[in-house]
Length: 403
Image (cartoon, rainbow, N blue to C red; front, side, top):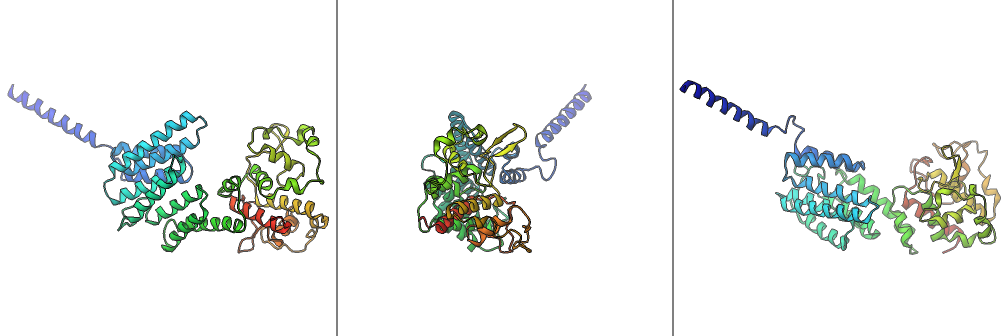
């Protein structure tokens, strides 16, 4: 009997031991740890994949429910989700959840490194969600982050360096259309040296900001132009809006284009059905009068109709053709359309002299409306960013002398 009890007791101990071991299972591989999943989640956000990011942060918190960086990451995911919500109530729910994650991330931050991660991510969250007083809050958070001493890449997973806070504060200023302040913050990142993770990002953002400042050096721009200026890719509706709101081309074309009633009564192929819900519907309707190449209606095989496709991004070659058409019409010089046709040698290594857009590309670059790369390439297939579009429109106003 005693022997049986001893065996039973030993079995219970063994089962208890296995049970304890089972509770510790959660790191089946070296990569299955809170920090790894946090970093992978942040990298997923860089690619715009919020769903994968959320799953990574959830795994991180499953492994360590007190891991502050993952809480900050979830706050950013929820803020991005809120931004994409069409329903105001759903948006409010997501923002509330985002802010709750931020509060917990702040409470659970165990050291200066995790505090820095919280401050920097909180800048990003506020810039996305934009709650009341968000910019003041971002500036306060940046101050806290910048005051932290002795931070290195070894203790900062994903952000790697203190300059990350300056970069994302610059991005926040861009969201607020505070372009001069944004330029200062990007310059601060660049002053920290060329080897940092955020240096190339800041360099690109710095150049973009300078384009905007150059375009607005002698004039002020409206909110529509500011919203377009910060975009990484502009669409066809953006081009129409900027031409109408900043250049006032509708007035310049007066007397050279059909009157409004003729456009309204035109056949549907000249008034594409897909522009009716666009916030820039009136601007698009006006540009349709001019039949500008590059942003004209396109035949869609699926719907078997001509569509404007207002949300489609604009390529550099398309903008070049639209700008050339404006010059031809407003300067009254038909020779512009054929001046560079038949050239034996192209001025650009990536644009053939025989291509349909070579004349337009040469026209706009020779007049300073658009700029080639330092390598001489025009990059016709690249999409136009907002800063480049704004600068092109500014230079167009100069050529037409309409300041």
